Length: 246
Image (cartoon, rainbow, N blue to C red; front, side, top):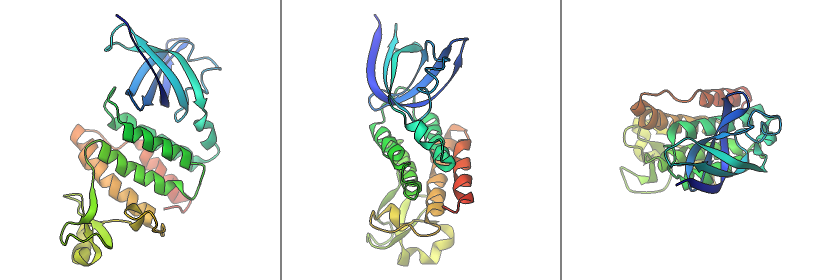
């Protein structure tokens, strides 16, 4: 008995598969990360559709659920990839987000929170000054959805939820400025905008947010799997640094 589903999905990428086909990978809200063959995927008509970040409507078909299926049809809904082609930093941000999902999300497992967050991030790329902050929130949300979320609700030492300024690199719990100041050299800095949506993003906050998320992504996700942090994330930080946006 054949298996089939149709869902809106975000393209994660594609590569050549034989002379005329492509092996494409999508990320849908209901079906998670899924790969399949696209007949004619090497054609000029299909190559723009298969760019990472595009929103597509995918119909996945296979004889059994555990087989490598094929997409028929795979229709472009929103050409998000084309909108960041002229922004190298934005393109690096999209590549990094996609790489983290491909490396961190279990295949065919739904992650509706990650899917929704990725859509928000993709929409934010149109606002050059806004999206780096949105991106770092995406990384913290990714950690949470993968089961490794930080506890930023209150100070682990005093129980207060005011002026949270640090995070313990061991527990992932927050500490207030007054309670953590004496141990500042051993703690990770918590930029105010990560806990207060109304807080402005100050100079150095984006770099601190990358350091915070990166610490836990590396140790709680990739080190446990014996893997390295995806290279596109390093290129993103480098691109933002060159443009003075950290």
